[in-house]
Image (cartoon, rainbow, N blue to C red; front, side, top):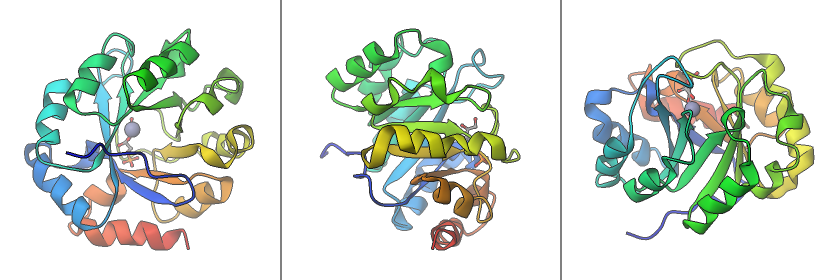
Length: 224
Ligand code: DX5
Ligand code: ZN
């Protein structure tokens, strides 16, 4: 299978989060969103420690890899992002995100991920200031701005957290993707795109709808 790459900056991408999908039918869910023409899928990895919820780990990612050619964006809400990086790469992750809140030497981890042949992402929680990532953000391929407290789908968008996108865009320039995650729907999409986000993670807004394809198209139309 050809190695999937992060879509080049310059396009707006809808990035469905499987957290609100039917976990008993994940392969089918991926097939449907692929049909909608999305290039990537956001896999939420939770360890029950960094966040108060537990989802999937490398074995599930590896099985999904057998069913899908989509770019796997692995948002790892875990306490030990270094320890588990090789396992996720081996499972078929194309992009690995870690949280700045649990990594003391982020530049080093970004290099480790690049050396493993994948792209690297850095994530900030709503209460984490931009200052925490200003030096290292330009080194990664995609910055992830949480617009809810991580752990659960279907929460209310935190407008003050979204505003950080503006500052981060100034810091990283046009060549690093900025992903927003949490409470993204047709109402909040124009706000975050206006701030400079280009990658829209959406769980509830897609998978709570019977027609996933129509929901993805509605998000695309909301950016226009
Ligand atoms: C929450 C996850 C999100 C989640 C977003 O911790 O990181 O990716 O699925 O869910 P919605 O789009 O439902 O707010
Ligand atoms: Zn996420």
